Length: 150
Picture 1: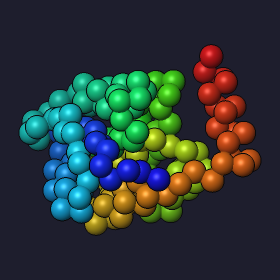
Picture 2: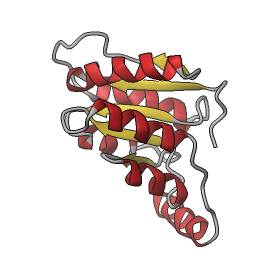
Picture 3: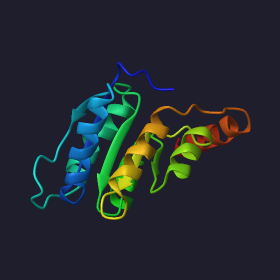
């Protein structure tokens, strides 16, 4: 589970900018603390420039969880998963958010800014932040993912 006092880094490209701004506003209202890693406008940018800081912070243990957004979510997700301590999950519905935490112990949620309704994204993020890892057989599988990286 996520400690509400912890800081959540959030980053997006131009295609995810409006969703990022919405999530920051709504999560702040709910008492969460976010660190906006950009982009800060809807002008065209390269998503890795804003995803790397989020993923790097999670990878180094500076943050427990993160939120990343690009148009499809795919590029952001691929970028984040380059880091050995990151398990980023592309989620476009709440069930994926729940299972990515329960079964994969994901620590970054990647959202498709062009393909998800804002309200669903908020529900998915809330579920992601507040669902625990089940461990057990899933821990064995997550450990095997990490082992392959070495």
